Length: 481
Length: 142
Image (cartoon, rainbow over all chains, first blue to last red; front, side):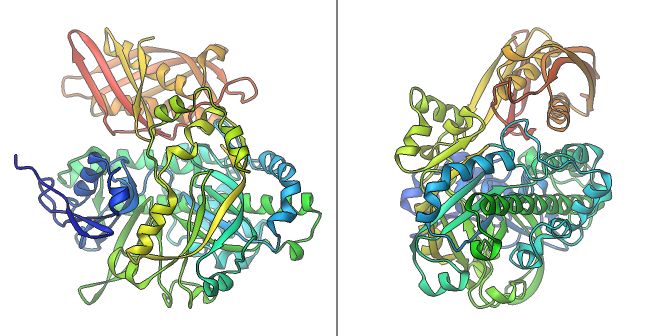
């Protein structure tokens, strides 16, 4: 076999020729500079190439700079499929449906919060359960769960959590249309009854941060961000509810692949034609799971606000803990995009990628019409997180998508090996970061050096023109699962 | 039990072995539980019965393990010992099984916290017979 080479397109883009694996319908593009390119896994490249073989894929199989090997689709993968000849694939969304990030701003300065930080984290740790085998504070009965699936964050607002203003600052208004609870299995419901308001484990977190650098004064002012300000970031998803929906539908799709005679290079890419019952059923259930995730982040936000009020002894007005935005980074959506000068309805799959719509996009709320959509990129717990804005270039090149995080570089085992004999907790404390973690093992696995440097990832999406930097947020205190 | 942890980027897997497919499946299940918590601290207080069926041995393994993930995540049941009471494999690959799982309710105060397993996946999945020994690879999304 001839040796194939990747083609560097420019400083921030690598092309995968459409001969990389047999059956590719379009080429691949990975957004990487020379530094991040060194860590690119052979198997992740193959995954991007495999996605390019799926029926109805439009233009290219894409991957963001935080790419790493996933299941079927690479993490960091973006792919759009035509409505007539395309497919829907649960693997292009992932197990944690609507895993995402929510950012709250405040009127508080870091210096005001620092003396109460430990106390705050303690209350948050109690209020927002985290870790393996933890349950949320709420136990939803059948009827309530039904509403969560149908309404998402709107359900939470109807329960007195937060306000309508929060919904305006949530992707899809915190409530995806077309959710069909009747398509969600009993098993998913059983897993969902008591997990609303819980973080989960792994890379999920609740973080108290400070704005440490502003890159775009004007945009920061519009988003309500200023130097030295305290922010809170929530990173979690649809918990066991979404995991079960994915598990259930991978089985359905296995059968669909045979039924419709789709040839796949990898079982985890199981999919069904867009107009099939299987695809429509998955989308109905996936949207219910997406709504579950928005209700989850909304409930966590509510308890976070309450914790701040209690510990800081301040009212909501003085605290000013309003939302900046909430983004989904594991989801499939029907969106309008220009293809060769023609507006088309496409199913955009983002798996570990964030929507990044440009200024003026009709789906953006009035407050962000001028700036473009805020993009929230969480880093590892020792370095930083970023606030970016979507661009027209992203709209044209990546279906309005950008990166979602740092991306792992060390396997869990390797991270644990390197953490042996060290106190990650102490090391972070020496850097001024307090961590409360349900599991010691998680803390070691999630240590900063297990991840790519988020700054490199963000510089690539900015360099490629997919997003622009607004602010950098540094962790002060972290609750980890 | 005959299992070991597989080290892969970002996630965790189990390689399990057994003289029979049944034994290997039992080892894989126990191995999965060992990723969630230290099994030394788990008591055998309760029995949970699970069943699974699939078109292929690989599908059966994933389906079986996801059944155990479900019981852990929905009801907090952590297993320590798994006994497959009945296992049928047809020539066309179709298979089904029934198992008794011995364990107890997970208690974060008493049990160590390891990995949160979202699901057993088809990624890198292998069910093979080598030199008279069954060997299984399964990777979990965590």
